[in-house]
Length: 262
Image 1 (cartoon, helix red, strand yellow):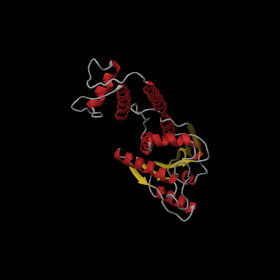
Image 2 (cartoon, one colour; image 1 turned 60 degrees about the vertical axis):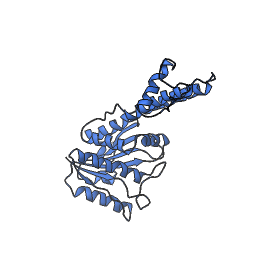
Image 3 (tube, one colour; image 1 turned 135 degrees about the horizontal axis):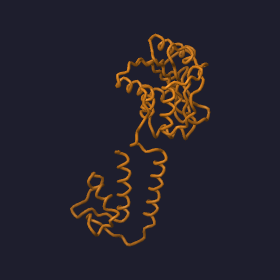
Image 4 (cartoon, helix red, strand yellow; image 1 turned 45 degrees about the vertical axis):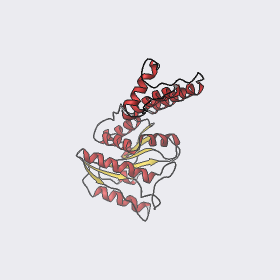
């Protein structure tokens, strides 16, 4: 399989550079695109970098991109972009709006990560799609000027986006059950806020717990034991010296730590 990957636009601040919002398109196309190239090569795919960093005009930039792609016998040409204009979600442009597996899987995989799936659209008017000799798709990951899109993108990170694109190209759908969804992340934050409110409202006399024994509330023992075993808290020669608030914090820390290392 021979793939051409283009990190859209020129570099930031030059003629033909990308959209700017909460994030900069030119920076993020390269963060995602070069990771896509790396991941594909790790899987034995022959990949050609079709990125053009500096040009005298937008037209020159597009011409050089297409020339780089058409200089090779490619099975697929992929141009990575970020959208603007206040919309929401991901979309893929193909010649005539043609549906093919790689394009459909990109939309599906990005949807699995939490982005709105805007679907496959007609990109016949886009130079890199229209003038490519190979089957081509231009991916719009999300909108740089929509905060919810950018927040999700930042939460996931470019590597996760690249993985979604890479697996789409190689014919797989993304599966990552270990990652928190945004909904789960919000639920965890709400639970932490609730626990913190309980901590604030504690008014009973201060009790000190030096050891994980019958004097410590049963509900707290697992969290304290977990924190001790993972070196997250340490005692002194006189014991742990934990109070009721500390027990709550240990429970929170355990839950967060388990999520982070899962």
